[in-house]
Amino acid sequence: MTASVLEAQALRVTVHGRCILDVPRLAVPGGRWTAVVGPNGAGKTTLLKTLAHLLPSAQGRVHLLGRDMNQWGGKARARALAWLGQNEGGAEDLLAQDVVMLGRLPHQSWLGAPGPSDRAAVEDAMRQTQSWDWRERPLGQLSGGERQRVLLARALAVRSQVLLMDEPLANLDAPHQADWLLSVRQLVRDGRTVVSVLHELGMALQADELLVLAHGRVVHHGRTDDAACRQALVDVFEQRIALHQVAGQWVVLPK
Image 1 (cartoon, rainbow, N blue to C red):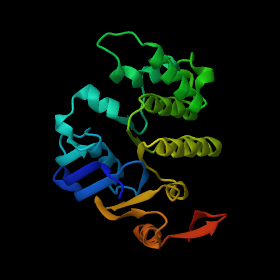
Image 2 (cartoon, rainbow, N blue to C red; image 1 turned 90 degrees about the vertical axis):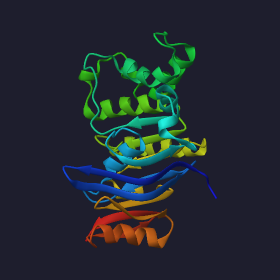
Image 3 (cartoon, rainbow, N blue to C red; image 1 turned 30 degrees about the vertical axis):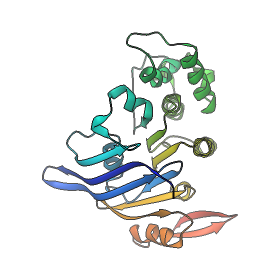
Image 4 (spheres, rainbow, N blue to C red; image 1 turned 45 degrees about the vertical axis):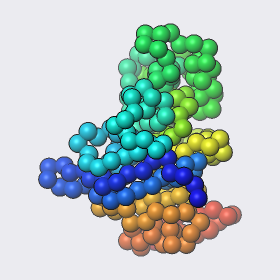
């Protein structure tokens, strides 16, 4: 059995008196890719932010690599867990390579200059996301898709054991979505753990695990090669989608 790298108990988030997340228990297996899916307003982003320890108002406990999140120091946690959020911005005049270098801050001493290993990690991440060619362009001059690839490179540059990504495919065209898929699979082969919120259900079904949310609750968590998992996906979207297998992959079509 694969050990869990993220474990949560009694997670609960309330906004203006309304509960938007209620997860009694959750265990995310290590060395696998877990896709989080569900209808709009299901609590996907809230869950990911809670797991990343980014919602101070959240109730419950989260353990990362066997340690309570509250026991981690800030830099140590940032080295172990990388985050890519929705619609993230930055200083518009900051060069793309400097944005990616921000991912190396947890590895640097206070006020320390980037070293050879930091520069190598940045170049590797930017080449992996095909963003190296515009490394000296300001962030504000990049298109939405180019910006997204730079932000993905920043998360990859951390070289963390766990990566949490909220809608990482936003603004990416089909070829670069395919590149992202290859990157995730390589990370998993390297023993890393990826958790991603996805609206692209066909892509999500290529993950190892599917975490299906509705109304702030987990309605199913299991392997994507399990028929029960696919049925849960159809059910949570109120039978308005149909799954078809084409060339060994599941394709999602509206009914």
